[in-house]
Image (cartoon, rainbow, N blue to C red):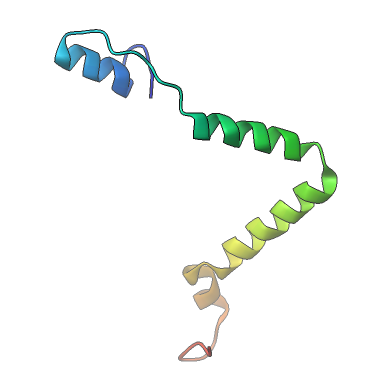
Length: 74
């Protein structure tokens, strides 16, 4: 969001007519560090790939396309 020409920071600076300091998003930085650290371990990478496949499959449009009944059981 810090784009020099069209980011939110630049748009706010132009609108307010003053310099706005950029604050890094520490949550995003932490996410990048965790993803990088975990990608080196094959078992963890496999776990997250399986979780992603399960999430994708259980999304309503996917389940509905494979399900032949009228209602889903609890």
